[in-house]
Image (cartoon, rainbow, N blue to C red; front, side, top):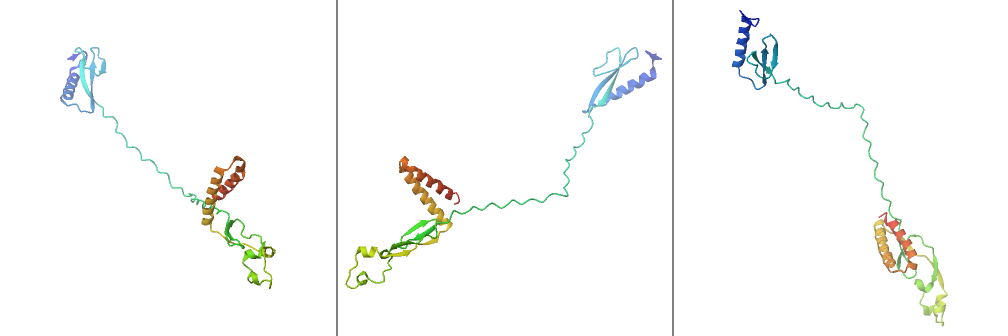
Length: 210
């Protein structure tokens, strides 16, 4: 016998397979689909149960999906066989010291002053101012007492002695001179300021080396 043109044996096999599939627990990674066969012999697959007029077969479909392949490790750049050697940085340019200054001693009175010239020009000075008289004034001429005019008329060629200052002393002196110039500039009339301003610029240029 046959049902709707389908042999009874085939129907029995399908029913047995359906019963076995229904008896198996559905895995978490499966999806149940329904295979419906119409009375005309057509086959329909759907996600809902078949109508009562159609033969129904449940199918468990694997929904686990393809296993994710591990990500490839990032490729490391191959070491270059011809890496250029590191170029050393040039040494820092040393700061130039300020212009040399000199501390000088006057030949006439032994007072000191500062100068940018270490070899000042010689000059004439009264002999009495140098302390170079060979004998007391009362013995210069027997019987004659020298007066101021006689002493002032006697001159001798002298030269101040100078010694170079260290860069540290020079910078300290330049800062003192700058402060003194700024003090004068703050109190000077406008007509008297130009030379002080020029002096200010010159001192700043020298202090840039300190």
